Image 1 (cartoon, rainbow, N blue to C red):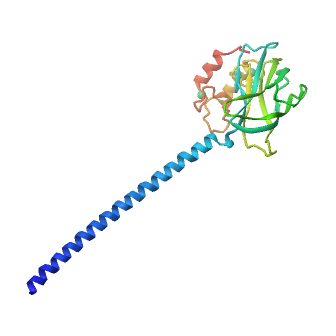
Image 2 (image 1 turned 120 degrees about the horizontal axis):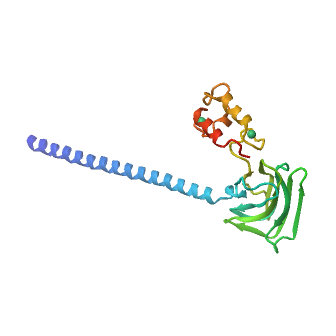
Image 3 (image 1 turned 90 degrees about the vertical axis):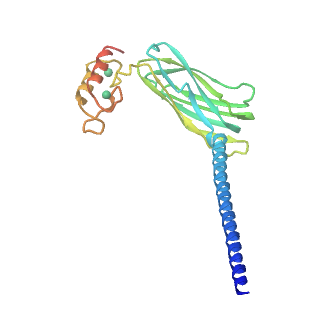
Length: 252
Ligand SMILES: [Ca+2]
Ligand SMILES: [Ca+2]
């Protein structure tokens, strides 16, 4: 009887251990599933969050197109145009913006504000002495677009060698409820001068060579470091920069 009870006890202990092992295995499995669900949820949240950011109103953009005009052939008397674009915007009811430019280098010729037929109110002022453009438009039907839409095209005539930033500032976008629309702004840049005209005085001459000579042997961070002289951008002014300035000597 005692022996029988002993076997029964052992059998029950074994059974209990097996159940416990199964329970622990199940618990482990559940823990792994729970972990997978949590990681998947986090990944899904990340994807959704990035998707929202990519298509959300926060990425409404006003920008100059093209962003960079770098052309030695745009000499005095030549003309070119830039466009102020907007993209990724919803329910744009009205806008106004300012844009400045360098009147030493450029003169304004004309402006086209579009699209026609959806603008009951359009006001624009261009001060060619100060180099400032101001455009204010109210749409008949609010504008919604993801692809770029032209707000204004501006034509300029080149006056001299040099450079000009097309600086967009005081940009205001309002929706049909009169609420401001958050947006990003990207400026444009024009230059018709040589990249080796280090002091930007219109030509590559001895003054530019002296800039290189004055910084010769310096490394980025050194006292006397002049980033203009590091024309190949390798963090030091050496023989390679000297060769570059010599090769472009006389350029305008
Ligand atoms: Ca120069
Ligand atoms: Ca260098």
